Image (cartoon, rainbow, N blue to C red; front, side):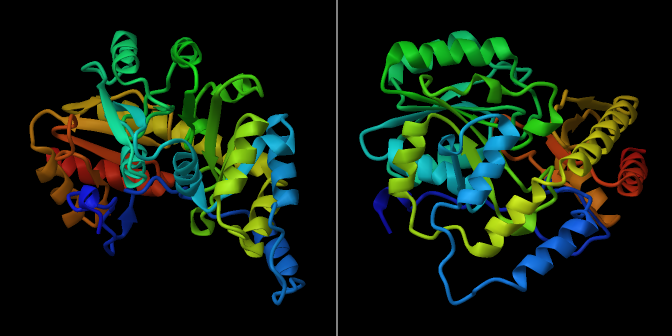
Length: 352
């Protein structure tokens, strides 16, 4: 292994058998039955001895229509993580710097390091909001070729105000030969999106995933929308035929069930607000969230103790208490109403 990678740890989430699993930010609802039927019907007609459409033309056209852009502004890959990996293979690497503002999605810095890039970590404020003076300091000192923002941020759930996105974008444009990446893996759960800022003349991309709102975590499909020149660059970097035919069909058909997706999002958002209100009534600090999860910190017990107490009751959430800058914090994914009820009951018992 390369010397610069020996000390790195992988990205892991415990997978244990429990009754209620609320630790990986998946959708609690399966895709619509009509999608399953349509998917099975198309699979039965696939010419499996032929390679898939290398350009994923129909899928990219469907995504483009969804966001009101051109197909040549869309790049799709095997999950949003592969989208980010391809992006960093093209624009990061040895001798270049990638900027992140912590705490944020761990894979932004992790993948950047895998490419050989230097990672400049800026600090967020104590309430996890973005400190624009710190952004200016980091960008001035490190002159990153790629700057990451995550909105809603993972693991905090905070939605980045449009004014912050525009300010950071202006700093990127002033620097020149630099790119802003807005990771919106949970964008559909928030009240605004940076997608409307994407333009061919602007060095910014917005990435999304089918895993959350489209209930397709099992398919591993993600994409970005950005300038056409950037998409051309990524098409040169990505491996040929990287999107198999089944994945292309799954994504294209999912886009025909927009209303069902929107209904699921409304249910999850309503449940998020219900959980947040119930947890606020307990001895818990609850951080505002625009995602399908809630970050919280209990006041009376150590986070690790609370996590174990929930696990003992067959409820699994994410233990973030040992992560840098997140001492004592835990994160719960929004589940079905029944799963959320069981989580609240178990949490009350642990804190009693």
